Length: 155
Image 1 (tube, helix red, strand yellow):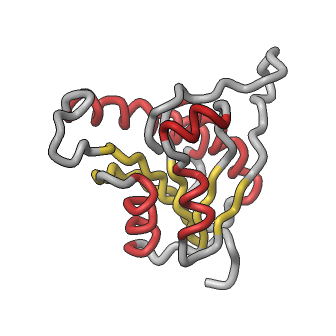
Image 2: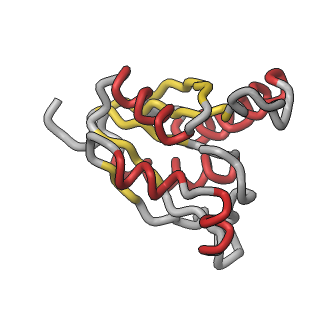
Image 3: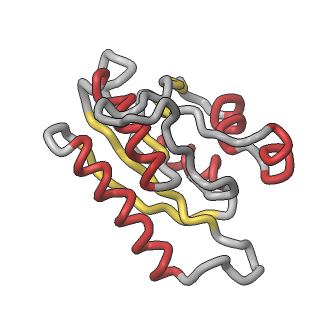
């Protein structure tokens, strides 16, 4: 492996995030993409939703990945953890990723302060390169702004 994009972990929080992230990554893909959705566990407290519901949601996300990256080499993976960033780091280590690729997500600073900012943790606490790609609206999208995931969803 010689390039930054040889084997990347692509954390995804929602179908909208998957579309934005895949569209942003597609021009740079020259290797393997590991699309990861983290099901955040409550750590002793009751989970927000049942495991079957969360796995079905992950499959919706991965359907978007297939639609966007269908011709490229990729794999999908559901991970479970109480700390989303640490779970993403573990996926990157397990796959010997050359980088973690993220796109910006919406939300006010106040909401990020209250809910925690996974992207900040990914950028500041990892042991490998993080590539932040600009969020590109779809080519056939009439809107000027792309949709952003609902706040509080894990990546």
